[in-house]
Length: 296
Length: 245
Image 1 (spheres, rainbow over the protein chains, first blue to last red):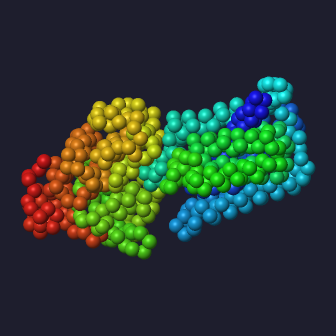
Image 2 (spheres, each protein chain N blue to C red):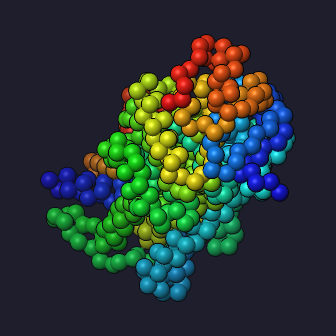
Image 3 (cartoon, each protein chain N blue to C red):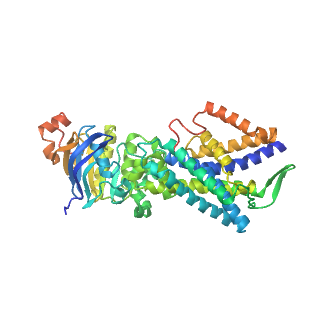
């Protein structure tokens, strides 16, 4: 019983944060048909913003989150303008998906090394958003920080869904994903929409970074692990499918929690990858993807 | 300064290295309906796409209301009041009918009037209202075409470009589409440039008919003139059409 509660609680928390970090990648893949490899460095940048705001300046937690959102939004927009936009204009001559895989990765390495030079290699302690914890059953505690992280992740994912379903620009993002020419003839300014989409995706990862920083540390390589997990989740969910991404995030979270509780953390990655291998062999297009690739 | 709404001169366009249209001249007067007919593969859709800005013209001029627009991107040309009802229909397959219609009001000022526009479209096309919550990919060909037209009615247009509204439809669906077009004609001030493979259906709406063959306009005249011209009738109909619609 204790084990079941621990698995469910941790799976829920892991899944929520994986979903938040990965959903931006899905949003970008759905609209631009590229894998944004800079998503991890946005998590890292977010945790440094969290450290700077919370530890160095002692600001309110909400302010820190909003600040991380804004900084990584700008960073993501700039990343698109530098590493993707110039190639989109030449999409006829280049394999956009492959080249941007490398160019966005290059930006990620640049950001990582700037962080290394500016902040040094040592980990920075990021204060938790809310202190304290709650004991669910005897022997299973989760911190308020983790609960807040899961809660805000869900709220942000839900807001993204509402944005895409209900608002003028959200509809435009989906329209561009589904039929680029038709969207343009509706008057959608695609050259402005792409950078904003990538800014939004990065901002979600940035907010996730503040929470992950509180859970672990802020360090130049803090984005590596989240990037890896986001990639797993995005591929497992079916490239470009938002609901698939959310299912996959919780599935990965539950698998991870299960192995940690039952077999210890040393087994986590082994079992996780074995499971992913098995799932992808049976469903090569992921949980919700289709041969033609899902569109937002 | 001409009083033409659309003036196309010496237009040349194509794909990769293949020239599809060349030295194409075409004019559309304000509030008039011009129909271009011609065989498949002779450049009708290419012409519309070049005018709409979805395809960069290689040479020539496109003037809209006295303003050069060739080389401008499609979203800019749309902003100048050009509505393009695309071949097939260009619907967003994963979006509902209503979401598709709302995208028709994307541009600036028309977004504020979207509720009113929706009401007007639903009134004009009751079938579209019935399907409002359905995903576009689940519609029949005729329904999709009507939604495409309805979406084109969601913002005020100065020029509507309509690409083969009868393509691939059953006769009864074609009638529904052309009835909707005739209604649209009555209500809207917009000029229309419509293309079709032949002129079976266009008698009721065409103010002027052009024949496009091998990438250029080879004949122009009224529907009455062209539909009684023996060579043209032989080529496009194989028999004399019933007069008008």
